[in-house]
Length: 339
Ligand SMILES: [Zn+2]
Ligand SMILES: [Zn+2]
Image (tube, rainbow, N blue to C red; front, side, top):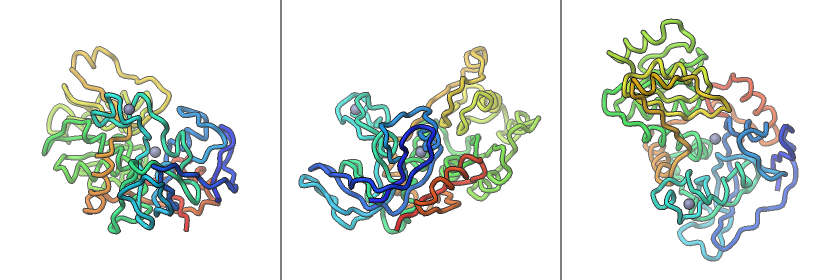
């Protein structure tokens, strides 16, 4: 099968023939129809955060059609439209038992990250990792369920927001825009803050009630005015740099929450005096549970979440897509389309 392959960290993708994935009795072979591209793919390519075994086929936002199922697979049939949950978990540890799949202490792999993924004509996954994709959701949007959408749904659940509370989404790329849609649907007053004017326009279209440029000198005062008081109840930190963590601390109210979604190898510029004295809560959020995945798909089918797909590429042009993502000019999600 044709695949986009990384042979070592720091190298571009090579379009190569790779062996077809061999499925075990409880696994399913999926013919890929689309696969989203994510910043994590840049991190994998650069050798940051995740070092898979090479040669590696990344791609962790795939959607496709079941091509074959192992002998012991029940409830999934050839021809069905599916998307995977990424974490191949042990199923037995305390995190698995409590529905925190992404925290499994004995994780067997992450599809497209440490296991081969969807930048290929076929990928395989354990049957229990697959979710059915209703016809109301396209392959390209459905594939985003496994990273962009689930991450936003889970981050919302990590926060403790009620109706008419105020929140800032810091960084209005793909995940940020989906978060704005969820906040809007939940009755939360949502603002978006971003370096990019185009991302702010997109966030407004997604339902942000107020937007501002990151780096605006009066940002803190403006956000306090927006929140009608002392700052917002929650900042969703989708950038993850030392500087944006400092900004998050300036925008959140006393007793408020900062949900950290963006991951960079940096140390937060936020002092312990304000964390202690203002009783701030800083929470990490990583991907999500199978239930978060099911709810992501259901919310897309209901039309409450519409992931922003801005460009589509054939597999052969994946290096071009990666360059565009790296440029910071992409104001939404890029997807690889396979026919
Ligand atoms: Zn991702
Ligand atoms: Zn586990």
